[in-house]
Image (cartoon, rainbow, N blue to C red; front, side):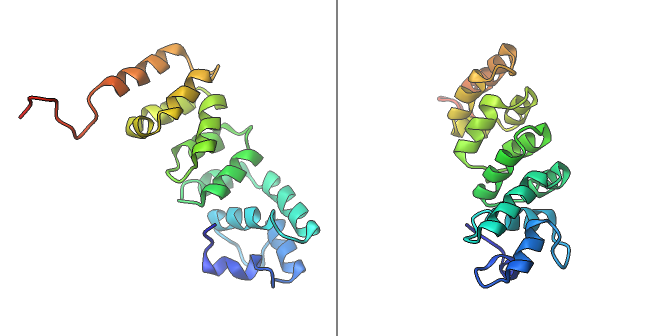
Length: 172
């Protein structure tokens, strides 16, 4: 997992428990940008100290969805995105931003495509080349009861069209 050097003072094994607990409660000594706070919370959920790990899990679940959405506008480690989606799976805005984030892993994309709100199909419709490169997205969207058949048909139509940047045979 990639972590900024500046976060190590809050999350390393040598960090005092009191400081880790403050970060786990989203109250570090100095404010952290949402992407750093979210990363710190996820890392601390794996802390060997059960008290810290428990506080971080609670902090992640209670971290405001608006801040999670803001963090998802940045490139994050795929594990951070996966844990954020897991903790905020009932928040459509979080699911949509995670679907749009280029660093979201395949397993999380499958889950979002298969269970997310109808609007998730629009995210993939806007990035048809991503769907073309990852056919499992369309397969998952087809399983989603919230995505209407006409949207699936539109995505399939776009996928069957000539990919952008390629020439048809015989074209000059």
